[in-house]
Length: 158
Image (tube, rainbow, N blue to C red; front, side, top):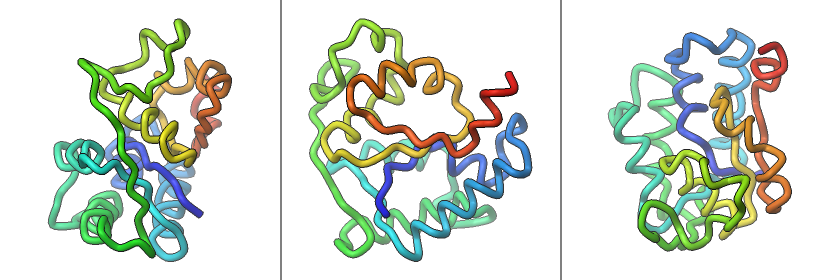
């Protein structure tokens, strides 16, 4: 198992997303624990993802499970048994790897690093409750980007 983990998965696991149900929080927590035990996180070589985590999570690894995952990812970024690293290329407010697709033009610039990394690594992106991803899921899929929505009920009931 390998995955690119969007920041909101960690925030949901921390209980910091009021819109997420307890089932959603439990699913995010279980996925993070499973990845830590049996998988690999996929990160970019320029540390854009770790930098984003640093703005929203506690580097001490507490008090939440998302914080602990961030600390684990930081500590394992050089461990090939727990982390795969790929190059992505910054380009103005985006990345060269980001698909040139009119249906993705309005996609959040702060999330483009995750998509660029998915293109470079062919790894799935784990997503929890960010509706920006849900609204372009068809375009992402058309560009061979796999997004695993850990809390699909959140979107289907809206």
